[in-house]
Image: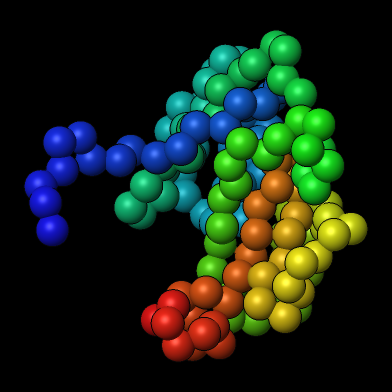
Length: 131
């Protein structure tokens, strides 16, 4: 493995309300809200940070319709998809109508419209190649 020139701090999502979106993701994956302004919020997790940046011209992705592409998405591990689905819905997520592989992963939208997935990948319930 090569030495990092600049270690990854974490992804930053554009959104209309950085604090609200940071608080949504905090309900899902924990962490500490370390920056909270009208223009920027940071959710610090154990090994990575998620950033949320205000974009006054933000347009939510229309996945799976390509008119406004998703541009990227976050994946979260979950050994029990049904139980985790209930928790992300209670946190404020919306389940997508299109579910390409509901036995292995589920697709949701965060309050700003970004798609994200919960998946068994990397858990004991997931495929062997993911462990």
